[in-house]
Image 1 (cartoon, rainbow, N blue to C red):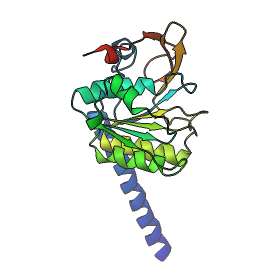
Image 2 (cartoon, helix red, strand yellow; image 1 turned 90 degrees about the horizontal axis):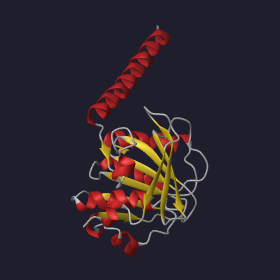
Image 3 (cartoon, one colour; image 1 turned 90 degrees about the vertical axis):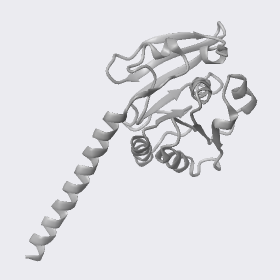
Image 4 (tube, rainbow, N blue to C red; image 1 turned 180 degrees about the vertical axis):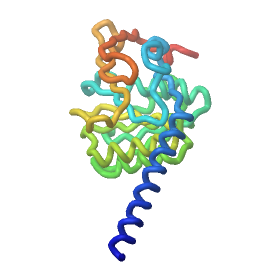
Length: 219
């Protein structure tokens, strides 16, 4: 009898956990929208028109190649519209004056600099879960573990926020990101963006963004 009771209780717990997962996904599907990338040309080739809310995305590329520049264009648009943006800068090369020159409003940009390799994912998770930010950018070099990717995905869903992982070397755990862009500096003084992974459309689209980018050029 005790074994049967234990099995029944275990099934009840599993059903309750499954119900929570389904409810979370239904809630995120109802709330999901997008955050502009900061470039109308790039938004036009992405499903929904930008970085998806309630999802984890990637922006990869060589150091100094513009992988952080692209999310900062989104930050310029968002802070210009009065929305909060967070940057968790584990790498430590964020340049504040440069961001301001791109149009980012410093009073609406929260920059967190955790010790290298420590608590950066936890910091991004807590910020995303708060629901007070439209965009959370995590700048780090190392790929995420399976557990870290899950933490960020769940936090993005709970906060209905776009979480963008920037500058990571190597691939993330399978299925962890819904959008993956590769960014490189162009010889013609701009950025080349390639869509490596996207839901709902075939990858491989390339977009050349001249400098100054649209968000930087906007008043």
